[in-house]
Length: 202
Image (cartoon, rainbow, N blue to C red):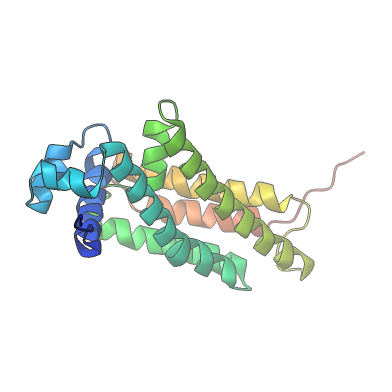
């Protein structure tokens, strides 16, 4: 009877592969790199995962699940969405101050690197950002009904704008090595959510 793959070994492989892919990208990460990090032979690595693509997609699945539990669900669960959005950017500023503005958002990294060359990676990344936008949109719509947010903008447009500001802040913070960009973008996000609409003259 064939030996079943050990779940703990698979988890270790995914953790090490995530670290490598996060820092140096999918294309530059080789099976030799992953095997070396795991201190195993490449043959043993292939026993647990049939291909590099399979490892990459599994890493992406695991990271998306983690982001949804740690970031998306808590962010969208609160009633005070202005406060929650402000805290999202502030936590990011603190995180990037500590790690020297390295790595960034793995899902966004994968989306930028792989969307034009591999539809499987693109579709998973797209689904993640769609779910994030949908959850934010519902929370914003609820907050609008209660009078906590400006009501003249589409909840979906607000959600996509906040995600774009956040992911754009990740890009700028990494490029400039400036974590304070999150605080600047966080202030702007709160203004977008709360400023009064201007009435047209005439």
